[in-house]
Length: 422
Ligand code: PMP
Image 1 (cartoon, helix red, strand yellow):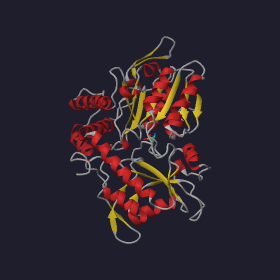
Image 2: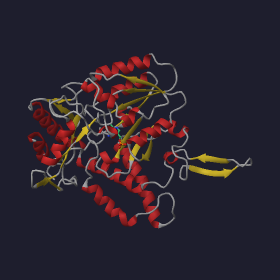
Image 3: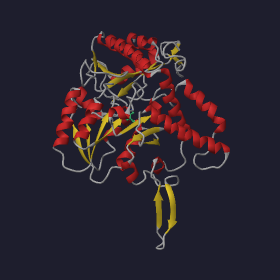
Image 4: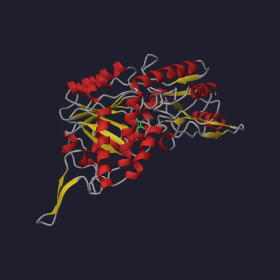
């Protein structure tokens, strides 16, 4: 509790892990960037709601009314958490990947997409099939802004969308979102922020950033799996075909005189939320947003900065360690750090951290293959499914992929100490 305030004890830190060397230790969850531990407050909220569980937008009964109310209030909580403008839509999705695919399906005909090669595959791949300008990895935030400015200035006329990450899932480096949004708007483009890694570590204010949309995942923001969000401008969403066709998205359906089905679709968020809404998921996301707000995000950010400085200084003192970075030492970062160690293969290191120290990290290419190529300066190892590293090369050869250590709310000093000691 002294770590993050009484509101924020995190489940999972007390699980005991057997070690190959004998004995057991409490698990050190240093893989928040993949999925963060769930806040106890969120589980408690869900448990309190459980007896009132019912269908959303589909029942006249008392519990359906409660659930519908909770679902819509969750939307309002998320809108506040994200600093949405009054006329923005908040659409509940499955997670960031789903949110960005939804937006990709809602782009007006002829939209050209601008994206840096450094993005997570979730913000790199949904635009396939569209005209896409893929920009090289910039070496500073200023270079990123310049490169986008040049690309947009010389782009053909027509609708344009820029997609950019708020914080890298590999380097943890924070991108100059406000500046990129200003450049995009100066050239008549829209911008979507992939906040999967930023939102758990830093307040996101859509209006202040002047971004058009934002996407994030509940399971990285201390809620359990199941729900994510796409929030932002209503117009493109309203004018698009529904993401899924089905009940809930349709206002009226009739068989026309010619025997064909005529459908009038909803215009608001319901248009893209066909099927029975995931009220548990939406409520969990809202509960996590509220818990972070109530704990005071600024305080959490300060605490994370201290841990991060300690982690980076500790890594810098270990011979042979290279921390991966695009923007250099001056970069603003969140609690996500990837590194390689001379003479070690990353998957061996990650396996040893788990088996000998009870530390959970991730190794591989982190669903960001072009970025890893840019960071490592060569072809990375053949990735497994989405980058789980396996390699034919052993200790003694140059590492071919990386280890990622990531943390957040509720991470005690001891986890970082144990990691650096290991
Ligand atoms: N974008 C970034 C920056 C991410 O780190 C991730 C998850 N690793 C995603 C998108 C995709 O999120 P999800 O798997 O929850 O859809």
